[in-house]
Image (cartoon, rainbow, N blue to C red):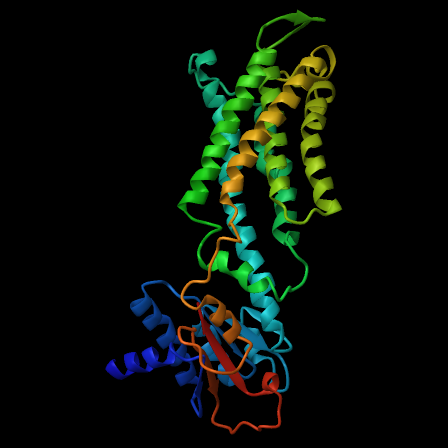
Length: 382
């Protein structure tokens, strides 16, 4: 153990470490060494990545947190055992600085958004409790309530997770700085999560108060009573759907036509559902709701919607802007820029850079072959 520790302490001060003539088992052991000793000495859980192109690299690929396999002259065993597979080593840069970075950002936003949109949904019935003597009477039509996560808010989330990114290609002058927020956990932490929850709570309170204030006076027009249980609940439910989709739309870094169409369809699906249940299926609970919302009470419903959207965005965007990393204030920590450069550059040793471990098999390396085609693997530690 003493020699292992000394080996790692020396290795972490180097830009790269070359381990020659090692067996497949030893390759995996080196990855374990980096993973375990970095956590012990640095006090943080590392993320290791291994890349190889042959069957003798499978053990090392499966040992690392992220395994990358190259399919080429030595077969497809490494690619089959890996989490990610591609044909050339040069694609590793794009995997890390585009797909890896953006996948983390999108997933962090998606986790917070899922809790947010469901808080926005369930809080208005609780706020309406005093008007219902806390009887537990629901204000949403239960069939529509079940469709909230399935129909009304699902497709925009899927498209956001697949398509959203601030830039389509690598920008050499920004890729290192764009990678830093993820390493410093700026996208997902307790502070970010609590801001999302506070935002959802404030928006739920505001749209409930606006809906009750605009439609809860009990006036009668054309045979319909304003503010009855189901019509008021239907309006609140529609405002929740509209607010949730607007919040996600404003989180998108790249606006595509398909994302805008999906958001619009998700919002319009609610009045279409109310129309079908009220006028086509003659639902007992929603009887007269569509005619009131889009007929006799359409002016007040429209004013309530405009006011609710304005307050929703005023509260939400100001608070959620606090969850975005301030790129101009982020600074690399302990050689961060050098660590990024050490992945692709060779040259003089930079103190503090995370070691790039190159493990070669027992065969000698032909010097005339390009580096991307050599029988080698790399272990990176974050």
